[in-house]
Structures are given as C-alpha cells and as structure tokens.
Amino acid sequence: MIRAAIAVAAAVLVAFIVLPLAGLVLHLDPRAFAASLATPSAQNALRLSLVTTALSLGLTVAFGTPLAYALARGRFPGRRVVDAIVDLPIVVPPAVAGLALLLAFGRNGTLGPGLHALGINLSFSTAAVVMAQVFVASPFYVRAARGGFTSVDRTLEAASETLGMGPLRTFAYVTVPLAAPALLGGVVLSWARALGEFGATIMFAGNLTGISQTLPLAVYLDLESGDVSGATALAVTLVALSLAIVIAVRALAHD
Amino acid sequence: MLRVTVAKKLRDFTFSVRVEVPDGVTAIVGASGSGKTTLLRLIAGLLRPDSGTVELAGRALSNGSAFVPPYRRDIGFVFADYALFPHLSVMQNVGYGLRARRYPAGARRRRVHELLERFEIGTLSQRRATELSSGQRQRVALARALAFEPKALLLDEPLSALDPQTRDRVRGELRAILAELTIPTLLVTHDEADRGAFSERVLRLSAGRIVQDGS
Image: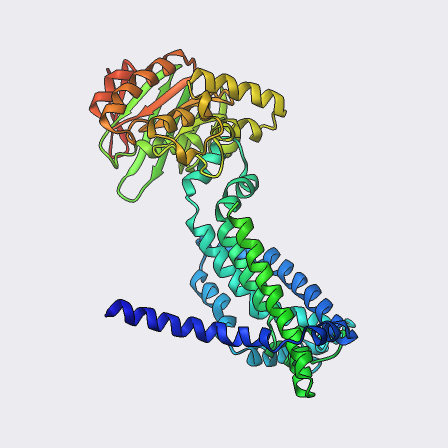
C-alpha cells in the first residue's frame, strides 16, 4: 500500500517534469528548426550564450575554488557569515539580483560614477551578462566545492606533506582529485544555471542582440513577437546543450 | 641521532618531552591520549611546538626562530590507518615521495620496483590502495615512507588496523624490516604485546611526559 503510494507520487512528479520537455520536442518542426537556428539573431544568441557562460564559469572556478577551500578548511572569524552570504544568491529572486546589480554597478548606481570616470560602463553590456551569471550561478559551484573539500580526509594531505609535497602540490595531487566528483558536479550545476539565466540578465544587461541577448532572452523575444517555432527551436537547443554537458561530465566522472 | 626537546600546551595537559633517539628502533607506549601521536606529529612538523627544538642528524628542524615544514624534513611517517592515497595505484603511492622530489621517471620506476620486490607486493603494483587487505596496505605504507630514503622513520600504531591473526604475522615481518634500518625510528603502540617485540628501549608516556625510559 505504502509502496504503491510512493510509486504513484514519484511517477506523477517525473511525468510532470518529462511532459513539458517532451512537448517541446513534439512541437518541433524539423525544417523550421534548421531555418530558425540559421537566423543571425539565433546564431548571435547561441554564440553569446556559449561565450558568456564559458567566461562566467571560468571566473566562478577561479574565485570560487579558493573561497570554497577557505570555507571548508579555514578557521577565521565570520566564517559562518561568509558561508551564509555565499548562499544568498540562491534564495534571492533573479529579478531582484538584476536590480541589485544595476543599483550597484549601473550608470547611476553606487559604483557607477566611479566606474564611469574610469571609462567603464558595465550595465547593458556583455560584461553585465557575465556578471549576472556569476552572481546567480557561482553559489552552486562554491557549495558543491566546499562540500567536496570538507569530505577529503586531512590525514591524506598530512601524508602528502610528510612525503615531500608542499601545500600547493598537495592541493593539486591529493585534494583536488579526491574532491573532483563534487567539483565537477558544481561546475555542471553552476554552468547550467548560468546558461538558463534570464531575470538578472534582462534587468542588468538588457536584451540587445549580439551584446546581451543570450539564448533564454532570445526565446522570450521570439515568443513575445509571436514566433513560436523560433522560440521552440532555441528552447530545444538550450535543453540539448544542457543535457549534452550533464551526460559528458557524468561520463568523465565515472572514468 | 634525533634530538627532541619540545613543549606544547594541549587541551588537557602541557606536552613536554625531552628525548634522544639513536639509530634503530625505540618504542613508545602509553595509554591513549597520553601524547604518543602528538610526539610523532611534533617531530614530523605536522604540529608546531610552543617552544623547544627538534634536531635530526645535526640539522635544526624546529627551534625558536626556524620551523622547517613537514615537506622539507625527510622524515618517513606511517599513519595509524596507513593514509594510502585511494585515487592512486600501489606503484604511484610508493613512488609519491620520489615524485615530490622530482626524480626522473626511469629512476623512480626502478626504485619503486626494488621496494615492491623487497616488500613482496610486486604483483599488486597496479592495484588501487582500496583493493588491498589491511596487511598489504601496511606494507605499501611502509614502502612509501621508506622510498625516498628518509633520515628518520615514525610509525603510529602500525599494527592497530590489523586483525589479531594478521597482527602476529605482520609484527614478525615488520620487525625484520625495521631491524635492517639504520635511521632513528620511533614506533608508537598501545599494545603490550608489541612493546618488547621491536626494541630493547621502551619509552612510556603519560599525560604528555616521559615517565619511564628503559626496557
């Protein structure tokens, strides 16, 4: 009885997730798909999404890895506060994040005049797209990496040091390989979140073709302008991209 | 010769030990929590003493001003749970200290093979550390700690992870290997059966002090 109830509940949720995604594919007209993807705006959106998510992922890993390590290993005052701050973007609505970024870095924002004096204008630029992605997506990587580092047995690091490896090489040869599944998981989650980023991007970076119009924004614009098949083609591309990365990383992690 | 005069304030007591360890095996016994592992970690540089000196073969490893980090001490350490790297093969584990010292690949391979043969674990060279029995793991840990020809060897309860039957066999093997070494060797144990097995000299620790030094 209980097992049947569990099975039904599970099946309902799985179906609820699968049905809309399957619907996307069913709605797809193969000829229109190719044509839609060939348009300059679709090409621009695809290229922009790949470039910006690669940049935001690079920044997230470069700055997030030391932060995650410090959170996992450091004993410093305010560690719990920093820990909570890192998680904040996960619970902040993306539109709020976009507004906050605009009020901080926009032309009339807190840092705006200072940046403007230096000749830097961030809002409504490709840089703003990357910033919005880092803001909303980096916590997913930092959380996963922190968990990965915490789970590494510190005796193994001590052993590495007694064998002659300094702290940096110990990190590279022992800590990172042992935390690798968690690090990869974090990379995938954070990349997927950045690829799908919409709310913060449209608030802070706008929706400008070739500058800030990433795939999700292009889907929105197509739908707004009545081009359902164009929106569907881009949406399927987004799903396929995400799926391909998830599968590739899982395969790598199992090697 | 390993000369140790160290003090360190711990939670329950102040650890304070003065000891000279000549070449050959010196056993350290004492109840758990008496500071045996602390002594080894202070010597290896994994813990920093509050005061005192550690000197190995005439070289100051730790004194008032200088502190040589563990990776520059050339001291072999066999951990209680062996601490083999689970993501590396037996061969890579044993060769780890040579890789740290940037030995060329050929020299590294020769040295590792020599050790694997000597410890009779040659057939295991491609296995992961996680696939070994506890007796095999102990040999790999020992081979790894000796591969880079350390100037001293520290063993923390090297038999405690073994079941009683294996322990008797491995104790004999370990004794034979340690007997060939000509470096200061400290072996920590809380098993009374081990105390006389490895050395004439036995130090007894209690609450961070040496309360007995004899046989």
